[in-house]
Image: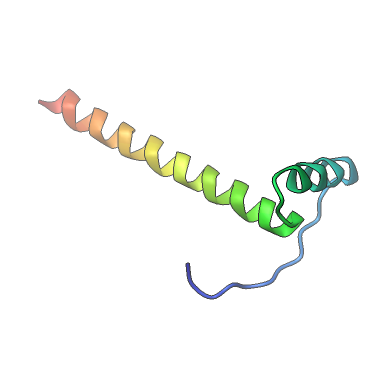
Length: 61
């Protein structure tokens, strides 16, 4: 990963409480938990795109 950039995040108070509890359960900071979840979501999206691209190539064959 490259250099980190700070930015403001507006989030529902109840959602933040849930994220804080989840982060504590996994021994992460709230920020670390948010980064982890975003990283996992981006990995899943990349896999879905690759699967879709491979499906398109197989459909042409």
